[in-house]
Image 1 (cartoon, rainbow, N blue to C red):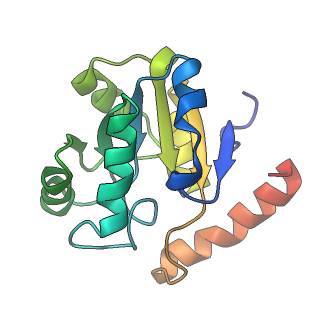
Image 2: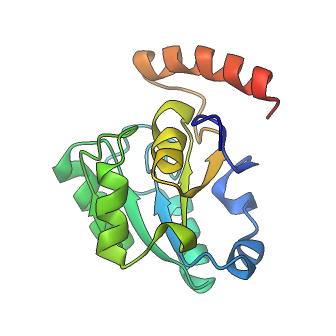
Image 3: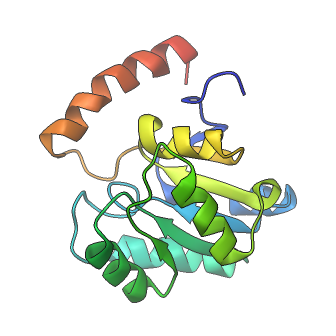
Length: 163
């Protein structure tokens, strides 16, 4: 992949991802961002959609791990409620958190997908780690100021790369 910000697949939301197609391609593990991928930004607990998507992935045979740049206490509490492991302070777009999550799951890059809503963190980290990356539109329209600012250059990249 020439552009670390270009995902392999785009979807409106996690629910729209065709998990059967991913399974047929040999993917068995999913690394998930939480904030604005599975729930509104800075949620203190999962919303019903979060549980539904984790269950959908589980029923399709996927093992999962949250990979979050958020503080340890919040992301670990959320992961416990969802009954999946978590890597906090993941340092995305760095790869250390992604690689740690793969190690926790016993996964490798050939069978793992990274799902997230931000090109500069989630998709860049997944691509840099050599994973199949899936970009989903943000869960909620309202975002904190510094995240909203990143959406402007993301929009430019999406227009240039035509996705």
